[in-house]
Length: 134
Image 1 (spheres, helix red, strand yellow):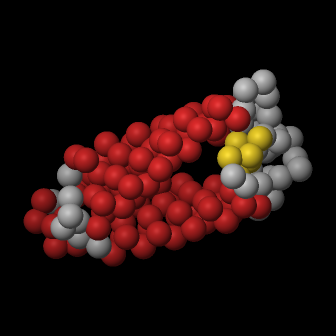
Image 2 (tube, rainbow, N blue to C red):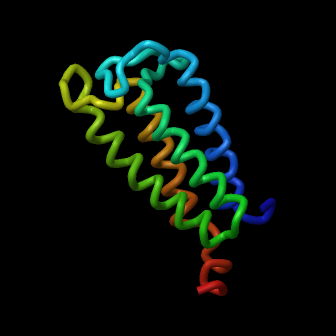
């Protein structure tokens, strides 16, 4: 794992998103599953659905990071692309009934930042290793 930026990133991001997903359940007790305004984990609004999404993404990244370079590279790129979409769409959702994962400005910045890092590493690193595996 120390020689693969993709495995390291997937493992670290996976662990962080798992912790955030678990932490979110401690602060979202008593709010609706699809609440358009959640409660804060630091400055990021979450609701129970958002927590479950964090758990799923964290588990997928962690498993890929602990698995192999090809899986980590694919998962970093996939999650990065999804977060890019969420970050862009999230700019228009706060204050609307469509905001079922309680996105806020800080969350959008985090999603766009995560997208940038995951896509940058997923698409640029470990090319030689991935080519040998393919």
